[in-house]
Every structure is written in structure tokens, then in C-alpha cells.
Amino acid sequence: MLEFGEAVRRFYGNYLNADGRAQRSAYWWVQLYQTIIISVLGIVILMADGGSNLLETLLKLSTLEEFTVLWSDLGASGKAAAWLALIFSLVNFLPGIMLAIRRFHDLDFSGWLVMVFFIAGNIPPIGPLASLANFIWFTFPGTNGPNKYGQDPLSPHTDSFG
Image 1 (cartoon, one colour):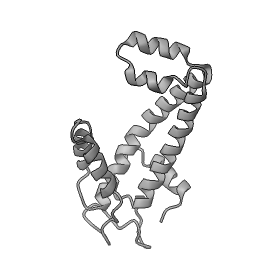
Image 2 (cartoon, helix red, strand yellow):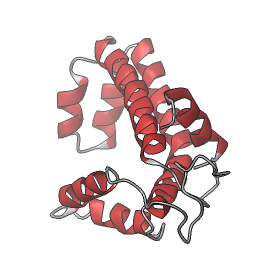
Image 3 (cartoon, helix red, strand yellow):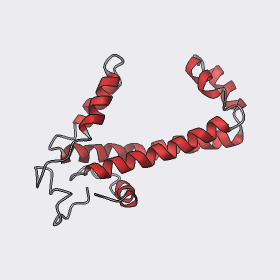
Image 4 (spheres, helix red, strand yellow):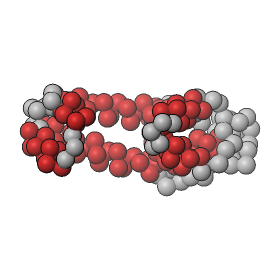
């Protein structure tokens, strides 16, 4: 099993790499890391001036003008945290896709399933079910030994960077 820091290092070190396999710990440590960062930034946003009304107001927004008013009422720390959350999300988008592809490879499935789950996850009636299915699927252990996508990342003699 990978350690937390090593999983995050490999996540960024394989920014554009869809080859090979990623063990469960590589995927789930990164999910924990991203959840912690976004949660902390979300708390900062909600604690900023005007942040307490943010969540309920965001759910009712219908025009750009309403968003502009909401944004102008948000305090400086909330705006900074919102920008950091946006930048963090953009920076992590592509390596997140690559990690998911490598995770499917570890399960001996095509990385194209990432696109299938992304599309299915955005179809309102089936979106939550598709997301839940993807979540559950990634809890399964990878195939033992090498598969068509590379060496087993859990093998003691592997040279994989999964």
C-alpha cells in the first residue's frame, strides 16, 4: 500500500500519463487529499463576510446579475478561497482523469470507461447511480499479477509507477 505523501507525489508526477496501473491506495489517498483541500477552502468561504448566505443563495441563482451581487458581498478571504478552489480544481482535473484511467487499467478495463462514467454521471436520472457504481467499482482490488496494461503495482518486483 502506498503512503499518503507518495500517492500525492505520484498523482502530480504522472500528470499526463494514462499508461500503467494505479492501485487502490494511489486513488483513495488522492481522493482524501482533494477532499481535505476543498473542504478547508469551502469552510473559509462560508466563514468569510457574506459567506453564510452563500450556500442557500447559490442554490437559487438564476441570473449572472444575482451571482455578481453575491460575489460582491463575499469578503476578501472568501474570494481568495474561492479563487484557490477554482485553481486547485483546474490543476487537478487532468491528472484526476489520468489516475482514474490507470485505476481502470488496474481492474483490467479500458480507460475509456472514465468518459462513459463522466457522461452517465451528467445525465440527471442516472447520474447519482453512475457515480455510486464508479465509486464502488474503484473499491475492488486490481487484477493479481500483470495484465494487458502493465505489471501489478502491488508486486514486490514491479517497476510500475501506478
